[in-house]
Length: 249
Ligand SMILES: C[S@@+](CC[C@H](N)C(=O)[O-])C[C@H]1O[C@@H](n2cnc3c(N)ncnc32)[C@H](O)[C@@H]1O
Image (cartoon, rainbow, N blue to C red):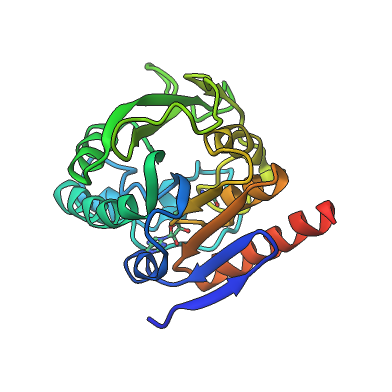
Protein backbone atom coordinates (compact mmCIF):
# COMPACT_ATOMS: atom_id res chain seq x y z
CA UNK A 1 0.00 0.00 0.00
CA UNK A 2 1.34 3.43 -0.95
CA UNK A 3 1.66 5.77 2.01
CA UNK A 4 -0.11 9.15 1.70
CA UNK A 5 0.92 12.08 3.89
CA UNK A 6 -1.34 14.93 5.06
CA UNK A 7 0.23 17.88 6.90
CA UNK A 8 -1.56 20.18 9.33
CA UNK A 9 -0.56 23.24 11.36
CA UNK A 10 0.36 21.10 14.35
CA UNK A 11 1.26 17.75 12.87
CA UNK A 12 1.12 15.06 10.22
CA UNK A 13 -1.20 12.13 9.58
CA UNK A 14 -0.23 9.30 7.24
CA UNK A 15 -2.64 7.01 5.40
CA UNK A 16 -0.87 3.65 5.38
CA UNK A 17 0.16 0.55 7.26
CA UNK A 18 1.86 1.18 10.59
CA UNK A 19 4.92 -0.87 9.63
CA UNK A 20 5.50 1.27 6.53
CA UNK A 21 4.85 4.57 8.28
CA UNK A 22 7.15 3.92 11.25
CA UNK A 23 10.07 3.76 8.82
CA UNK A 24 9.35 7.36 7.73
CA UNK A 25 9.54 8.96 11.17
CA UNK A 26 12.75 10.38 12.64
CA UNK A 27 14.30 8.46 15.54
CA UNK A 28 14.02 9.99 19.04
CA UNK A 29 11.52 12.61 17.84
CA UNK A 30 8.39 11.61 19.78
CA UNK A 31 7.54 12.71 23.36
CA UNK A 32 4.58 10.37 23.95
CA UNK A 33 3.19 7.33 22.15
CA UNK A 34 -0.50 7.18 23.08
CA UNK A 35 -2.08 4.60 20.85
CA UNK A 36 -5.17 2.46 20.44
CA UNK A 37 -4.44 -0.53 18.19
CA UNK A 38 -7.09 -3.05 17.15
CA UNK A 39 -7.54 -5.39 20.15
CA UNK A 40 -8.23 -8.60 18.19
CA UNK A 41 -10.64 -9.36 21.00
CA UNK A 42 -14.42 -9.57 21.32
CA UNK A 43 -15.08 -13.29 21.84
CA UNK A 44 -13.85 -16.47 23.43
CA UNK A 45 -13.54 -18.52 20.23
CA UNK A 46 -11.66 -17.83 17.00
CA UNK A 47 -15.03 -17.70 15.17
CA UNK A 48 -16.43 -14.96 17.41
CA UNK A 49 -13.15 -13.00 17.40
CA UNK A 50 -13.03 -13.06 13.61
CA UNK A 51 -16.42 -11.39 13.25
CA UNK A 52 -16.56 -7.91 11.75
CA UNK A 53 -15.63 -5.30 14.43
CA UNK A 54 -18.88 -3.40 13.82
CA UNK A 55 -20.78 -6.55 14.85
CA UNK A 56 -18.66 -7.66 17.78
CA UNK A 57 -18.02 -4.30 19.46
CA UNK A 58 -21.59 -2.94 19.43
CA UNK A 59 -24.59 -4.07 21.45
CA UNK A 60 -27.61 -5.26 19.53
CA UNK A 61 -30.06 -2.38 19.39
CA UNK A 62 -27.44 0.37 19.77
CA UNK A 63 -25.84 0.06 16.34
CA UNK A 64 -24.75 3.26 14.63
CA UNK A 65 -23.58 2.90 11.01
CA UNK A 66 -19.80 3.14 11.51
CA UNK A 67 -17.32 2.01 8.85
CA UNK A 68 -15.61 -1.26 9.77
CA UNK A 69 -11.81 -1.62 10.08
CA UNK A 70 -9.15 -4.24 9.42
CA UNK A 71 -6.48 -5.91 11.56
CA UNK A 72 -8.80 -7.10 14.34
CA UNK A 73 -8.79 -10.85 13.60
CA UNK A 74 -5.47 -12.21 14.95
CA UNK A 75 -5.19 -15.08 17.41
CA UNK A 76 -3.37 -14.23 20.60
CA UNK A 77 0.09 -15.49 19.62
CA UNK A 78 0.02 -13.62 16.32
CA UNK A 79 -1.33 -10.55 18.10
CA UNK A 80 1.64 -10.49 20.49
CA UNK A 81 4.08 -10.94 17.57
CA UNK A 82 2.48 -8.10 15.63
CA UNK A 83 2.46 -5.76 18.67
CA UNK A 84 6.13 -6.58 19.30
CA UNK A 85 6.97 -5.81 15.68
CA UNK A 86 5.43 -2.33 15.57
CA UNK A 87 6.14 -1.65 19.25
CA UNK A 88 9.89 -2.26 18.80
CA UNK A 89 10.04 0.12 15.84
CA UNK A 90 7.91 2.68 17.67
CA UNK A 91 10.24 2.57 20.70
CA UNK A 92 13.13 3.80 18.54
CA UNK A 93 11.10 6.89 17.64
CA UNK A 94 10.47 7.78 21.30
CA UNK A 95 12.83 10.09 23.14
CA UNK A 96 14.84 8.49 25.92
CA UNK A 97 12.78 8.21 29.11
CA UNK A 98 9.51 9.10 27.32
CA UNK A 99 6.21 7.23 27.80
CA UNK A 100 4.49 4.63 25.64
CA UNK A 101 0.83 4.02 26.56
CA UNK A 102 -1.25 1.45 24.69
CA UNK A 103 -4.96 0.66 25.08
CA UNK A 104 -6.24 -2.86 25.55
CA UNK A 105 -9.20 -4.70 27.08
CA UNK A 106 -9.42 -7.35 29.83
CA UNK A 107 -8.97 -10.26 27.40
CA UNK A 108 -5.81 -8.92 25.80
CA UNK A 109 -4.32 -7.35 28.92
CA UNK A 110 -1.79 -10.15 29.65
CA UNK A 111 -0.82 -10.38 25.94
CA UNK A 112 -0.36 -6.61 25.74
CA UNK A 113 1.80 -6.52 28.87
CA UNK A 114 3.99 -9.24 27.34
CA UNK A 115 4.20 -7.40 24.01
CA UNK A 116 5.13 -4.04 25.55
CA UNK A 117 8.02 -5.65 27.43
CA UNK A 118 9.15 -7.71 24.43
CA UNK A 119 9.21 -4.47 22.41
CA UNK A 120 12.01 -3.36 24.74
CA UNK A 121 10.00 -0.89 26.79
CA UNK A 122 10.28 -0.71 30.58
CA UNK A 123 6.80 -1.74 31.74
CA UNK A 124 5.62 0.73 34.40
CA UNK A 125 1.98 -0.12 35.07
CA UNK A 126 -1.66 -0.35 34.08
CA UNK A 127 -4.07 2.59 34.09
CA UNK A 128 -7.78 1.68 34.10
CA UNK A 129 -10.19 3.68 32.01
CA UNK A 130 -13.55 3.46 33.81
CA UNK A 131 -16.27 3.86 31.17
CA UNK A 132 -18.89 4.45 33.92
CA UNK A 133 -22.21 2.67 34.37
CA UNK A 134 -23.14 3.53 30.77
CA UNK A 135 -20.89 0.60 29.68
CA UNK A 136 -22.18 -2.75 28.45
CA UNK A 137 -23.99 -4.67 31.25
CA UNK A 138 -23.27 -8.33 32.12
CA UNK A 139 -26.42 -9.88 33.58
CA UNK A 140 -25.40 -12.26 36.41
CA UNK A 141 -21.84 -10.92 36.54
CA UNK A 142 -19.71 -7.79 36.59
CA UNK A 143 -20.30 -5.02 34.07
CA UNK A 144 -17.60 -4.75 31.36
CA UNK A 145 -16.88 -1.24 32.55
CA UNK A 146 -13.14 -0.79 32.10
CA UNK A 147 -10.47 -0.81 29.44
CA UNK A 148 -6.80 -0.36 30.24
CA UNK A 149 -3.71 1.55 29.26
CA UNK A 150 -0.57 -0.54 29.53
CA UNK A 151 2.25 1.92 29.95
CA UNK A 152 6.01 1.87 29.95
CA UNK A 153 8.99 4.06 29.18
CA UNK A 154 11.82 3.99 26.69
CA UNK A 155 14.54 3.19 29.18
CA UNK A 156 14.22 4.49 32.73
CA UNK A 157 11.35 6.98 33.07
CA UNK A 158 12.53 10.59 32.74
CA UNK A 159 11.24 12.71 35.62
CA UNK A 160 12.42 16.01 34.11
CA UNK A 161 10.16 16.17 31.05
CA UNK A 162 7.88 18.87 32.45
CA UNK A 163 5.14 16.32 33.19
CA UNK A 164 3.83 16.20 36.75
CA UNK A 165 2.23 13.22 38.45
CA UNK A 166 -0.81 12.11 36.48
CA UNK A 167 -3.84 10.23 37.87
CA UNK A 168 -3.59 6.42 38.01
CA UNK A 169 -7.17 5.92 36.77
CA UNK A 170 -9.57 7.86 34.55
CA UNK A 171 -13.37 7.93 34.59
CA UNK A 172 -15.03 9.16 31.38
CA UNK A 173 -18.21 7.95 29.65
CA UNK A 174 -18.47 7.29 25.91
CA UNK A 175 -20.84 9.85 24.38
CA UNK A 176 -22.51 8.96 21.09
CA UNK A 177 -22.26 12.56 19.86
CA UNK A 178 -18.46 12.45 20.34
CA UNK A 179 -17.94 8.95 18.88
CA UNK A 180 -16.97 8.84 15.20
CA UNK A 181 -15.34 5.39 15.21
CA UNK A 182 -16.86 2.05 16.18
CA UNK A 183 -14.25 1.75 18.98
CA UNK A 184 -13.56 5.49 19.32
CA UNK A 185 -12.25 6.89 22.59
CA UNK A 186 -13.87 9.94 24.27
CA UNK A 187 -12.14 13.20 23.36
CA UNK A 188 -12.31 14.28 27.02
CA UNK A 189 -10.37 11.14 28.02
CA UNK A 190 -7.68 11.69 25.41
CA UNK A 191 -7.35 15.37 26.40
CA UNK A 192 -6.56 14.23 29.95
CA UNK A 193 -4.14 11.53 28.76
CA UNK A 194 -2.03 13.71 26.45
CA UNK A 195 -0.88 15.45 29.65
CA UNK A 196 1.76 12.67 29.69
CA UNK A 197 3.40 14.63 26.86
CA UNK A 198 5.31 17.81 27.80
CA UNK A 199 3.69 21.08 26.66
CA UNK A 200 4.59 21.71 22.97
CA UNK A 201 5.82 18.10 22.65
CA UNK A 202 4.88 15.54 19.97
CA UNK A 203 2.20 12.90 20.62
CA UNK A 204 2.15 9.85 18.33
CA UNK A 205 -0.82 7.58 17.65
CA UNK A 206 -0.06 4.84 15.11
CA UNK A 207 -3.71 3.68 14.98
CA UNK A 208 -5.44 7.02 14.66
CA UNK A 209 -8.94 5.83 13.73
CA UNK A 210 -11.14 8.92 13.78
CA UNK A 211 -8.21 11.04 15.00
CA UNK A 212 -9.20 11.50 18.65
CA UNK A 213 -5.61 11.53 19.95
CA UNK A 214 -4.57 14.11 17.35
CA UNK A 215 -7.57 16.29 18.21
CA UNK A 216 -6.62 16.07 21.90
CA UNK A 217 -3.06 17.11 21.03
CA UNK A 218 -4.33 20.09 19.02
CA UNK A 219 -6.75 21.38 21.65
CA UNK A 220 -4.00 21.23 24.30
CA UNK A 221 -1.42 22.97 22.08
CA UNK A 222 0.71 19.89 21.46
CA UNK A 223 1.94 18.56 18.14
CA UNK A 224 1.02 15.14 16.75
CA UNK A 225 2.04 12.47 14.30
CA UNK A 226 0.07 9.40 13.38
CA UNK A 227 -1.23 6.97 10.85
CA UNK A 228 -4.38 5.12 9.90
CA UNK A 229 -4.79 2.31 7.37
CA UNK A 230 -8.48 2.82 6.54
CA UNK A 231 -9.11 5.53 3.94
CA UNK A 232 -12.58 6.22 5.38
CA UNK A 233 -11.30 6.74 8.93
CA UNK A 234 -8.28 8.69 7.64
CA UNK A 235 -10.65 11.18 5.98
CA UNK A 236 -12.79 11.42 9.13
CA UNK A 237 -9.64 12.06 11.20
CA UNK A 238 -8.36 14.73 8.79
CA UNK A 239 -11.70 16.54 8.92
CA UNK A 240 -11.73 16.49 12.73
CA UNK A 241 -8.14 17.77 12.94
CA UNK A 242 -8.90 20.62 10.49
CA UNK A 243 -11.98 21.57 12.54
CA UNK A 244 -10.01 21.47 15.81
CA UNK A 245 -7.27 23.66 14.34
CA UNK A 246 -9.85 26.07 12.89
CA UNK A 247 -11.46 26.50 16.32
CA UNK A 248 -8.07 27.56 17.70
CA UNK A 249 -7.33 30.04 14.92
C1 LIG B 1 -9.17 0.88 17.97
S1 LIG B 1 -9.17 1.76 16.48
C2 LIG B 1 -8.63 3.38 16.95
C3 LIG B 1 -9.78 4.29 17.34
C4 LIG B 1 -9.32 5.68 17.77
N1 LIG B 1 -8.71 5.64 19.07
C5 LIG B 1 -10.45 6.67 17.80
O1 LIG B 1 -10.76 7.27 18.85
O2 LIG B 1 -11.08 6.87 16.74
C6 LIG B 1 -7.81 1.09 15.65
C7 LIG B 1 -7.56 1.64 14.26
O3 LIG B 1 -6.35 1.05 13.75
C8 LIG B 1 -6.47 0.93 12.35
N2 LIG B 1 -5.51 -0.08 11.88
C9 LIG B 1 -5.66 -1.42 11.86
N3 LIG B 1 -4.57 -2.02 11.37
C10 LIG B 1 -3.69 -1.02 11.07
C11 LIG B 1 -2.38 -1.01 10.51
N4 LIG B 1 -1.74 -2.14 10.18
N5 LIG B 1 -1.76 0.19 10.33
C12 LIG B 1 -2.39 1.35 10.68
N6 LIG B 1 -3.65 1.39 11.20
C13 LIG B 1 -4.29 0.23 11.40
C14 LIG B 1 -7.92 0.54 12.12
O4 LIG B 1 -8.35 0.89 10.81
C15 LIG B 1 -8.64 1.31 13.24
O5 LIG B 1 -9.21 2.50 12.74
